[in-house]
Image (cartoon, rainbow over all chains, first blue to last red; front, side, top):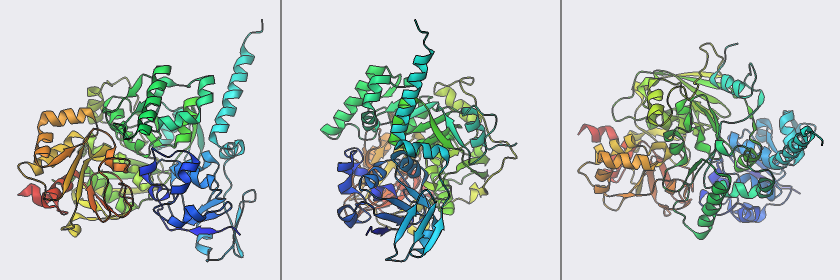
Length: 172
Length: 422
């Protein structure tokens, strides 16, 4: 069964991935051993694909470093559910295809041992016996998600532009 | 419809007649800033760069500042990769090590202009709001996509209007003002929002406004902005951007705000943020006597000439307390030269200060000035997160340059009003 990791308010990027490593670790395999190092030393050892993080307000505040998101995605974390997210972290998650669910009621309702399930298409999160709705993602954001993240999306756009440009060339 | 600064500027950049808060727009930023993280950014898109090249090399500003001079072979190789990229595509706006911290370089080289949309792969990109730009932080992946396509999406933020009245008392700085605001609003008090400063902004110098805007992100803000006035125009003129080279814009008087605040500047007192969050703010008076091991004076928040001058006024003819250390981190080479010429830097070195190269240094714990377990640092930087200066078992307090200088004399936290009045 997937595990639910619970944390508090204002979990910042230094707790998720210490600044001292930001210029020496960029790849997922370098990031994973240090993930949440100063917050919860057990996490990096015990996290399993499908696990969920549950947190309070302002999750991911601080630096623009993307290693926390890259690391959580690489660890196979299914979603981070929080009362709110800091904006750069929120964008980074969209860019990497990590699912974030902003739902204060679901966080409040959680009791240790509760099973947490997320239905993205239906916009619903189930915590134990209770179900909560969360707002759907805007179309612009879904397009990035469907492409598999921002870089695959950018590549698609580049190819489209290149095709349009070649169609505009006079045939001779 | 009456519009906020964010609505007006993002509407213009999106080529739309009118946009409202909450709308998502596609925009082409006027500038993209990246720093040492340019190397991993380029690595992500190496094949596409080889095929298509960068979309707007003339809008891309690169400043090497985070780990300078290179600390390890790996850092050196990353800097080398950046220099090669700059050479290959002929980037005009490249600043090698020693020029300064990217945010100070952007403003003092006339690269952050009123009315511009600027994004940067650094959270403190919001600094340029001081000059009337809409400036915000993004991650590495987004910077990579921008290098390739030149465009990105932004959600038009709601705005908070803060009305300033009066002037700051002696020995009270812009740092005390912004820490007080963050303490009042909370670390997420302006999350996703744009903070507009109105009212008696002439009471704040450009250095003051840079300090305030720099810390906008510490209350979650997407951007923190000041209107353009005579001080802005004079500053820009002196830094290579004469009037006519930019187009300022500002909010309509009747625009709609999510929240409005009034601040009487004359009531602000010296404050400090206690570990480990920036909104954990109390008057310095309540912390007096707290022993400190290391003092950090400088950074992109408070590393300008005026910051070193007020510290020198306090430390002139004095020594820092025994068994403490004072690190001096100028925000740029220009700042360092100005502080050398004014004599402020000589006073600080005479007092026992250790001069570091203009860069990010100890602020983020990547190298230089790391803390030991159990140690305390009093810093003029912008973050006091656990582990921020390289050690999770150390503590960081944030305060103004005057408070840091006054405290360095005593080896413990001290109200600067007492030092300046004696």
